[in-house]
Image (cartoon, rainbow, N blue to C red):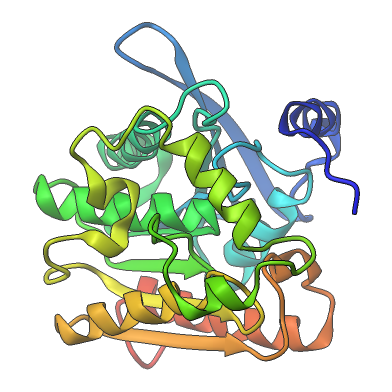
Length: 293
């Protein structure tokens, strides 16, 4: 199988940015957050054109092995959350591990959450209905951000939505051994991702690099976790859900049978579409703050 270098993939993705459009009926606003060193984090806000009042908000971190930027289909996928869950979505261009390994991307992820919470009035967002989410490495950043918000008494997060998350840098699960040669994603590729992301070490912040190793899971927001049956990341996602549940966190965990990592890019495919429908219902309920939503 042909594997393109991440640098080339990112150049291709950037050249396709003009085609990364949201669905009809959605506006996109672009902002830049300044870091302490003067550099910026580009942030994209999606919200419905027919907006009324303050909206709940999902801060969503895209996947890509910590090394690949926003994919050309991301805004289209995020559009479903805006239209069907009735929320705004904030999506950042966090720093990528090829140029800036951990903790750079994590710091960006948390800074974007802080910026969103601090600017709710300007953005038209309800500060009491903030959620985080992501796919793959982006789900890692979402989980780590939820941990950091709890630990630092930061913004209140009501929900975390984790799609086939990357959570365990030790990679000792049965699914890691089982799926070492699968196409698209496997344990060998996963190891390379961790090698790049943590090449400067974890800086004593192991839980924010690899959320499965948090000292405690108590006090974390309710979680919705999706898992692909034929994914090397399957077992660590299941274990994370169990740890949350043992700590008293309400969780909903769903597995897509006979599916591989990255299936969210196939939302037109019947089984995936049905699962996304259930995901959006869970998100809508969480952001409404009402189990009957």
